[in-house]
Length: 142
Image (cartoon, rainbow, N blue to C red; front, side, top):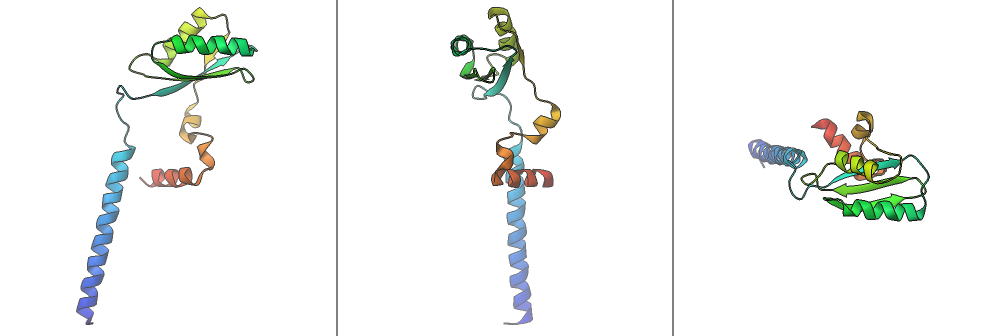
């Protein structure tokens, strides 16, 4: 093989590699852009109940939250006095659900809104996974 042929092969391989890197970068950019809220978008919110509740209270809170328009799933933990629910933002807002909760039920409660630093760190469960570490590394690059 001549030197000219080797240079052509190396140039072609580098060109293909560069094109694949460019395609990957464009794909990551498109996939990670925020999507507008639509009918399939779900959001999650948390209500901190500022008093001790029993299992009967938790069942009552669960039933009440499921009755609210747009609420999809509800989890109430009587040990930690926390209610977590998912809802469709096109149908309602978390602030509306929490204010109705305070007005309708006799519990001292407030919506838990994470700080900017907590939001920046992401999910505390996922932060230890290898996939999350790769994702955050790629996020810092792009």
